[in-house]
Length: 351
Ligand SMILES: Cc1cc2nc3c(=O)[nH]c(=O)nc-3n(C[C@H](O)[C@H](O)[C@H](O)COP(=O)(O)O)c2cc1C
Image (cartoon, rainbow, N blue to C red; front, side):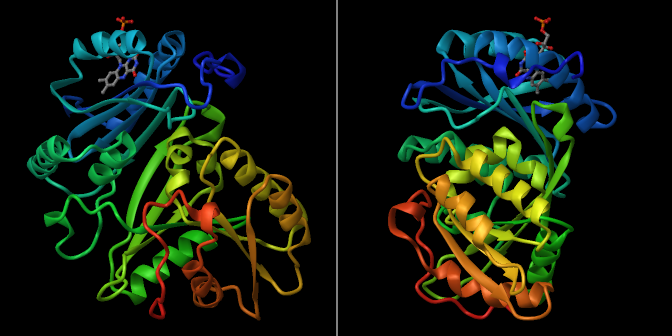
């Protein structure tokens, strides 16, 4: 364990479900010269210890020359962190974006995300100001503010409709290799849509920096957009990923047929979903020869719904999507109830 690392058993225990905490989001202009993600690692080393002492969990984003930080914890702890943060010369022009009381979503004391999106700082500032304005008219939660700013809908006209947070979210994770990322890249290619990439990291240094890519697929007239997110296996253990898990309708689990790898992935998924009130449906995609018995048993022991899809021959992106896509239109009632938007009734062929 690194000096700066804290074992998860030392994390605050005052995290009973239903317990209300303060949730605050602010944005600030970054004044860091040089590589920002490295500076964020330096901030992390210090902040991790201090945040645990204050019982505050945070997620820090860098995007378009701005930082955005999401804090959750007891009011006194959040105020203590904000007092430290406000006098730091590595940023300026702090703007409060969100303040509310409610349940914690973040599951570890530190997560951070970095995006290389080529957005201009003034455009990010404009979107942040529009969201603040919107907040006056309709209540929102911190996850929704974070998502709208850091992962805006990537569809024509979406920048005019900031209020749109209503779309289906599907995560893809593969037990081995890069099939999840290959699938998202292929979907981007056949739908002529840009793939958006983020890098992020969590509280545990052993998890390392991980990547995630997403693509937004237009459902056509009257249909909600479907966002497909490729997630690295390690990424599932990061607090920020877990904070958003209740909003996914489905997790596509691409099994490899190699028993240990498949079991490892299933166990990570099950533990990531363990604390969620709303759980996504697991959609197991496997070569015919591999079978679903083990995966289904692990899912059912954890109370997760598991749908199986068999791949005929090839396991390339097109074959994968062909078997998985029709199943994404099924919602299993309460199991998929966490998603604010229901799966579509019908969907065009993605490929
Ligand atoms: C964007 C940004 C976010 C930060 N987030 C935290 C944080 O969550 N917790 C924390 O203790 N320090 C955070 N820091 C570092 C603090 O600003 C400060 O430098 C550090 O806590 C040192 O405080 P101290 O002098 O009281 O030890 C952040 C700094 C920046 C620039």
